[in-house]
Length: 85
Picture 1 (cartoon, rainbow, N blue to C red):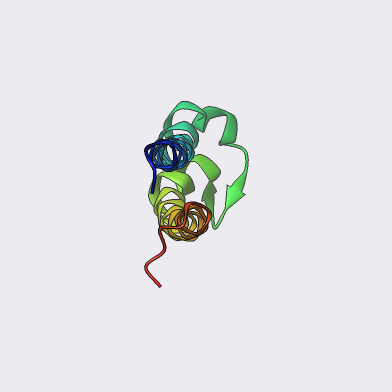
Picture 2: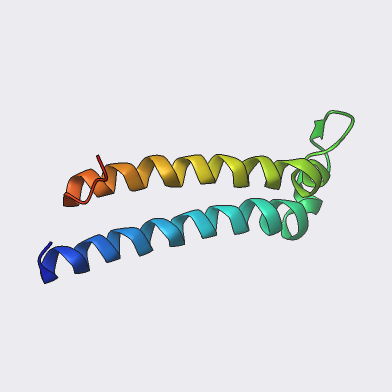
């Protein structure tokens, strides 16, 4: 991998990490704490949506983000020719 490709690979990796962290912040703190009063009227499983995000939703989103990150990094690895296959 050339120096230019290494920088592009690193930029793509950091961009993906920032995207995942922003999504996780939005789901874990945004919906559970900051926007909870707005979500109080929406019922999910007997409780309001803000509480659901605080208790279960943020963990589910975190696990989904792990799979999304692995899938997307596989594509970025192929794009820059650094696959382990």
